[in-house]
Amino acid sequence: MRPAFSVLFLTTLIGAGQGLLVALVAGQWYFVIGAGPAAESGRFYALGVVAALAFLGLGLFASFFHLAKPQRAWRTISQWRTSWLSREVILLPAVVGLAMIYGGVHFLEWKPVLLTFTNQKSLDLSMALGFLVAGAALLLFVATGMIYACVRFMPQWSSAWTVVNYTLTGLSSGFIAATAFATWAKSPLAGFFAAAALVLTLTALVGKAVHLWRNGRIKPTSSMRTAIGVNHRNIRQMTQGFMGHSFNTREFFHPGSPEAVKGVVALGLAFGFAIPAGLVVAAWVVGEWQIAVAAVAIQYAGLLAERWAFFAQGHHVQNLYYQTRG
Amino acid sequence: MNDKQYALVIDLNVCVGCHACVTSCKEWNTSGFAGPLPDTNPYGAEPSGVFFNRVQTFECGTFPATETIHFPKSCLHCEEPPCVPVCPTGASYKREADGIVLVDTDKCVGCKYCSWSCPYGVREFDEVMGVMKKCTLCVDRIYDLSLPPERRKPACVLACPSGARIFGDIKDPTSAASVAIFESSGYQLMPEWGTSPSNHYLPRRKAKILLHEDELVRADNALKIEADLAKPAFSAPSIDDMSSW
Ligand code: SF4
Ligand code: SF4
Ligand code: SF4
Image (cartoon, rainbow over all chains, first blue to last red):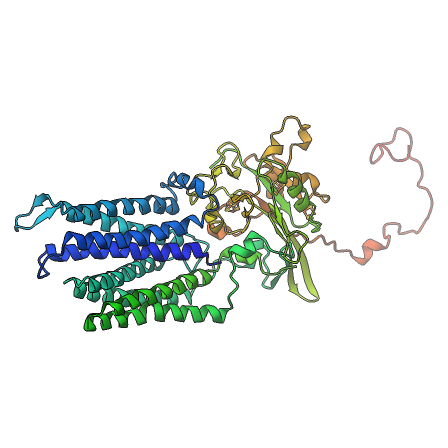
């Protein structure tokens, strides 16, 4: 499959944005349940939400380059009953909108108590909105992952691991961004974010490894025999019907050699997960925000490689029909 | 499930790989309902273009026992089209009335997602217009009342010089398409995906006749008398009511 850069940027950027939102909400909740020593100011959350909105906005911007007719993008919300792509298109602005309200409420320090529980804890407006934001962000992870996981004809994608990985990678990059933000702001949440980022990044690494292992053991469902319906063990394509190119030879193939793809997979694992995990620990111990920002930047480059490889490693069933130019 | 399902039946035993269906399809459709079908760089080193129909060639077996199969391929108008539900805009749809799968080029955003959900690689994106295109089963020919009834068929069917393409309603057991599927063991491509393609293919059929020596040498004139047989009487019954008179 040809890795489209618009999609690589879209999925990595919104993943980080959603992850950052989930991190902020988790941070707020961490204080509410009384685990933290002090509370954070409303401005801290508001600024964090602005950073998350920047990620989401850039992702949204990149997504428009994927549509040949962006002026018709509004039509894509119509088929939410059947299409995960449509569901993603609905959830993305929903997350953005909810995050704006969440950030605004924090900025204004508007915290009317909505519910008081028997244990004297209470749920205020900002926390309730936070749960909505985090829920929508998690649903968006599922929608994005399902766009790929529901393509039955791409055996490397059509697995629950695709959804798991999109979610874990997004959360990992979001929590690392939150670590950088909190360390820079000298927030008491820095330690919590760093610990969560470490756990999530290592879990994401394991999830990715399991997915790669699974993909190495796929048995093809279709063969030349079923593709053209001739019951013969030795079938070769003499010509695909044209000597140049077509949409089908461009969209479903990529120019990289198998070795190059393996190299990019390794780069993705190292820069996307292993090195950032180490840097997060370093930032946590040393307390320098520059280290955490370096982790964000290195991980972003690594995740672009990881996503590139995810596409390049997808072998579509239709490729059976496009094997020989001539 | 549709009550009516138009489809093509392609006879691999007859196709000679001349690409007449490819060119006639392009010629008709580029100025038709789903047109244009633009080409980019058509005379350069890397030509590319949109086609609704391609003829591929496969070789089976090991030399010298090989067999060449010409294999025309266009949208199969699946009865369970996986390309339709994934479309976010509803531009891809399957018609209730006749089961034809179409793209509404006024609604398509060009996300190409439907093409990922077609295992047969028959949807082709038009880079110039920025929308997805595919075989329309010549929906603008088959209902055209200004054409004489025998010409209300897809362009590729009319162009095929060997008559390898049959058009018809596969839900009507008396249609030429259904009869061909039934009588010549028509099959579907990649049935394992449950897409239930409407287009069917007729397999290669070996036409062999076994002759014995005694069938080549005349054995029924045992007395070797080479003469006209005696004429029977006029009123005598003849074998076929014809001979001898
Ligand atoms: S052949 Fe492909 S494009 Fe045509 S209906 Fe079936 S899945 Fe859709
Ligand atoms: S039915 Fe029409 S559109 Fe489809 S392959 Fe034949 S000529 Fe082309
Ligand atoms: S025109 Fe007929 S014989 Fe020629 S390639 Fe097409 S189907 Fe085969």
